[in-house]
Length: 178
Length: 178
Image (cartoon, rainbow over all chains, first blue to last red; front, side):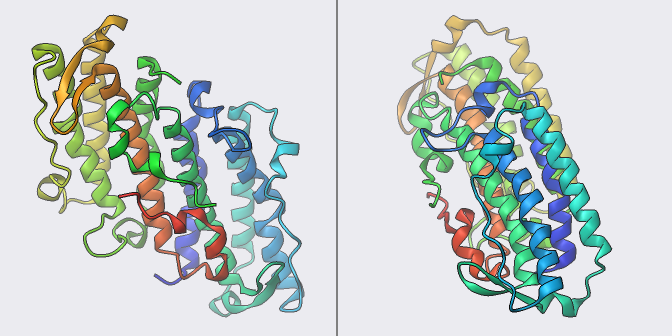
């Protein structure tokens, strides 16, 4: 499956509603617990997604279009959310994520990107030349990697409760993949 | 986190809405594709969840309560959905999953389970004695293992589209854990 801007936008538009349906008003035992010291809870992950909306995806799209192939993206701070979202209730975080995602998708739509634009390039600070198409596909796949993580972090809370069924539940054998 | 009937029901009640928000009306490229021969698409996974609602969870709960510790559960056919759901549109499957889950949660509520009931036992065909508490916790964790799987199957469709970002996206390094 090659990258399609339309398919990417379809997925990006659904993530706030997905997280809202899964997480809003769940007991804190599901949403505030993590997988051990230095790991993230579902609540931390939503804060991280907000931080990426504000500082990463559209910032990089705009920089790529404005400055072109010689431009190197600023590094993204994967733990930046710990400074700007940690103390807020999950319901507020879900609202904010929905709002900033919606704003970013409106901004993306207003760019009126054409097929030729998707091949335009800039430089990633770690691995060099990347295309706009790869950046947009990664935005969508990043949502999925964190949905994958949230389901794992939540299942981890029941790792003992399931008893011998533990061996049949793949999510309990996921190591997070670094 | 020990098992809590209330927390289990909270999660079980949310899964149909979560899958609806994530999947309904998404392009088929996201929902009908799998990870290769013999693997499941998001659509297959919803059909599997319906099959488990109809033939596994509440059937086992009722058998445990009715027949007690000497009773061995009938084996669950993990591929049974291939016979009863494969040909139907995803929108129909999402509707059916919401309906059967809702019916099962009403039936569970009507049992008016007490704390002492959660320790009651029956036998699993593969690993012997299990408690009602473990069975109910597994019902919830099974939802999460399939949400984990759906996010992985969908992300797999963009494994090439993300280019060099592939190395940063944990979901693309998940092997499904058997």
